[in-house]
Image (cartoon, rainbow, N blue to C red):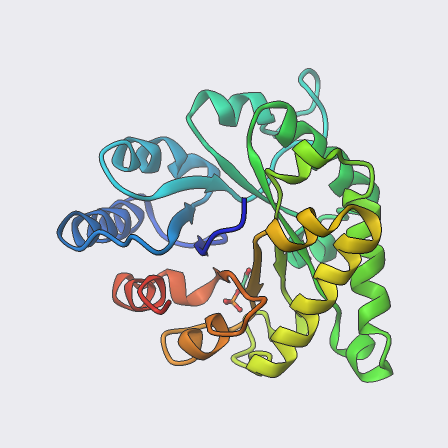
Length: 252
Ligand code: PEP
């Protein structure tokens, strides 16, 4: 179902005390100022999920993980399964983030398996795609994103696609302070809807939530979110400060 979403990806940041203060500040804001035109998702590191879902149970935001294991269960030392996340009331999971692709070897095949695991447990994948700077400069960025989407999603049913959120995150914009212009974001979001039309249906093309990610902040969120095919943002650095994140969740 298509809706406005702002999701905060904390990555590997914050001590426990800092994490608790940040979610509490956001929950206190939402208690006084309910946001009715956007869904808010907070994606902390694994070990803060339980604290975060405890706070979210009394608040308006939902909780996402940043990764999960491509396998069900068993001898996979250090991994966390989709079922374990579901047991903690985690409703979303970022899958295929460029940092996982770059540093941890997440291939399109592994990403597709992780999406299956998430959906099996009723966890909505926030599937990330996006081109590198070299790919943008070479002019083949649309093909790159098309391949990423088709490899990860093409085997899903219409019902499964209903639970998938796509985040378009140009790698050159992540953590660099160099965001895509609103026009660049709009071009790619419209193109992603064309890919969904080709591979699925007009309903899925129109109804899928597509977020922009890459140096989105309090200063540029409003203009980016105003683009017709942009449904909100996946926010990294700017989700670590309550004040700035609050300005972003109220930017619609
Ligand atoms: C991200 O990591 O998904 C992201 C968009 O990071 P940043 O906002 O810091 O560029």
